[in-house]
Image (cartoon, rainbow, N blue to C red):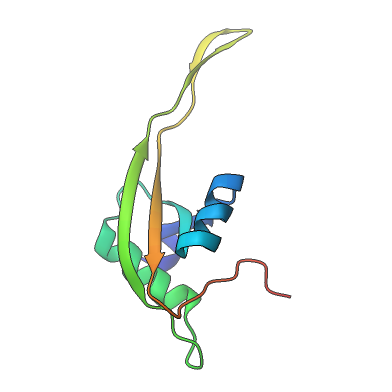
Length: 99
């Protein structure tokens, strides 16, 4: 699987921002078929550079069930999705909003 197929987008919320600052953990929305090994390799390759490599200490994944919602046309269901909490090694840093 291509690294751009594994990682869909960063998950930026108040909770994930606090986790990044306190424990160096980033949250990502990932492909539902991706496993922890593929996620680790994709993060290290996508966010790392030759001058500033990124090392991943651990990866935890969560399958999030889509909610059932009422619409004007009856009941509908949001899609299921998968998120990954990636703990970066000491000294590694990922900045999503580089200037």
